[in-house]
Image (tube, rainbow, N blue to C red; front, top):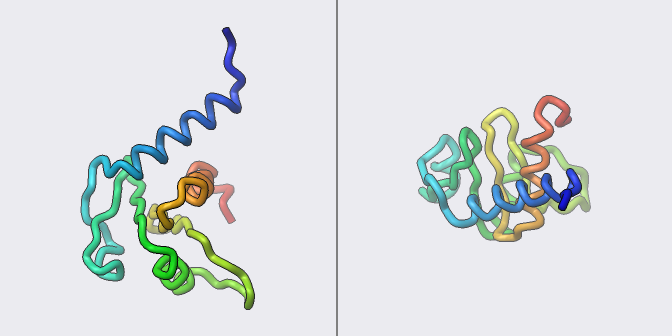
Length: 106
């Protein structure tokens, strides 16, 4: 049985997301003060912050310049290697995609 490369890539991203949501290897990071003392989940060098949606919009809005009417569901902060996401696996996978894009990320 041969698996399609997209199937393997999706399975890998799903595994990373499940590890992040499960709380593997929690350690404090530079964003801790702005998140009420919460600890991030860690995936290697990547910090993953799972916070309620209103906080996501506020925290990402402070760091990203968005036009009026644009909705921010989550964000990837390349300089800090951090993801801020609500407890939504689809948003988390989207932000993980930005992390994996590396230097191609605008």
